[in-house]
Image (cartoon, rainbow, N blue to C red; front, side):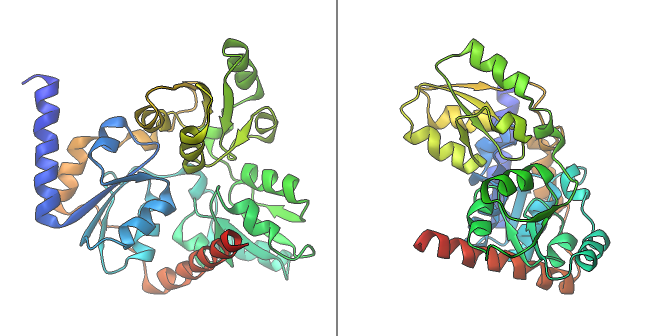
Amino acid sequence: MDIQSENKAMIERINQLRKERNAVILAHNYQLGEVQEVAGFNGDSLELSIKANNTDADVIVFCGVKFMAETAHILSPEKTVLLPVMEAGCPMADMADAEGIRKMKEEHPGALVITYVNSTAEAKAESDICVTSANALGIVQNLPEDQEIIFVPDTNLGTYVQEQTKRKMYLWPGYCPTHLRITPEMVKRRKEEYPGALVLIHPESPLSALRLADEVLSTGGMCGFAKKSDAKQMIVATEMGLIHRLQKENPEKQFIHISEQATCPFMKLIRLPDIIYALENMEHVISMPEDIRVKAKIPIERMLEESKKIQRD
C-alpha cells in the first residue's frame, strides 16, 4: 500500500471511530498538517477547549500538549479527554510549580497572580486569573494602576505586557524554548530577503525580536489578521505549524516562516496512528483531583468574564 492509500485508510478509520465514540478531535495550530486536516476544530488551546465544551461530544481527543488537554478536562469534566501521546508535554508549563507560586505570593502579599493558560492545572489552581496571549494586555490594562502583579510562567509575554502597560510585575522565569529561539537577527534577515512583507510575531518571543515586528499577535490573531490584511507576503514568527492553516485559508498569499529553528518537537509527536490508537483504546485519559480542577476553573472563568468586559468596552 502506498503512502497516499495508507493515509486515506487511516482517515477513514478515524472518521469511523469518531462516530462510534461520539468524539470531537481538536488540533492546535502548531500540529502537523495531517492532524489539522482530520480535526473537527483547529485553533489555540483555550479556544479549542471552549468549542469542545459547547459540543455534545462524549469524548474529546486533544491533539496538542498536556496542559491543553487538562484545560479541556477542567471545563468539561463530564466528557472523557484523551491525549494521544502522553509524552506531548510543554516545557514552559512544567517550569511553574504550585509550591513556587505559593512562595512568590508570600514574598509579595497583595500581588495578583496572573497565570498564562500555558500552565499546569496545579499552577492555575494557585492563581487569581488566567490570561491568553491574545487578552493578557487588555486584562492587565483594566486592572487598577497600583495593583502589583505576579505573572506566571512566561517571562517574555510578561515583559511585553509590562512594557506596554508600565505596571509593576514580578515575572516568573519561565519561557517557551521554541519562541526563545526567535532572535532579532532572524527577523532582520527575513526582512532583508522579503522587504515588502509584514512581520507577524507571537508575544512569547523575546522583546528584542518583538520590537522589530509589524504586528504582535496570538496564533488566532495571526489567522484573523492574515484574512483581513491586503498584504500579499507575511513573515510568520511563531511555531511553524501555523503556516499550514494560514496557507490553507489564504491560498493567494505567501507566508514565510521565520526559521526552521522555531519548531516545537512536542507539538509534532502526534500522528494519525496515534489518534486511531487513542480512540480504539480510549487512551490516554487526562484527569486530575476534583479539588484541583475546581480551583483551576475559577481563574479561567474570571478571565472569560474580564474578556467580555473588554469587548463591551
